[in-house]
View 1 (cartoon, one colour):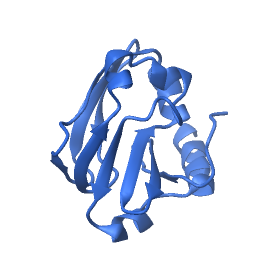
View 2 (view 1 turned 90 degrees about the vertical axis):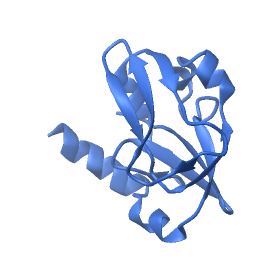
View 3 (view 1 turned 180 degrees about the vertical axis):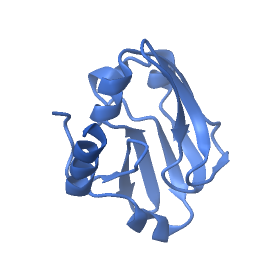
Length: 130
């Protein structure tokens, strides 16, 4: 069973979101990295770029798939994890810590309420696998 961290929010596209004040750190869930296989390339938005919830903000390539990265929240990109750009497999090794993808200053707090908590996400995965 995939590891699901308590205290984070989750999107239907299998991203986790850690809200700290008006900043959201975003990464790929353990479930998603496990399904993807070894991640070999990641494309991310630029710092300063405006992103919109539910729109494509990047892409990842793995040994199994090529997948769009879909924004879980709207906002402005304020930081990119350059270690992940250089060595995308960090996401496979530690998706919730060293493998974070980007940070944004989110623009619409109401969007946070649309994300799942850990128990809802766990249920979501179970239903997806049926």
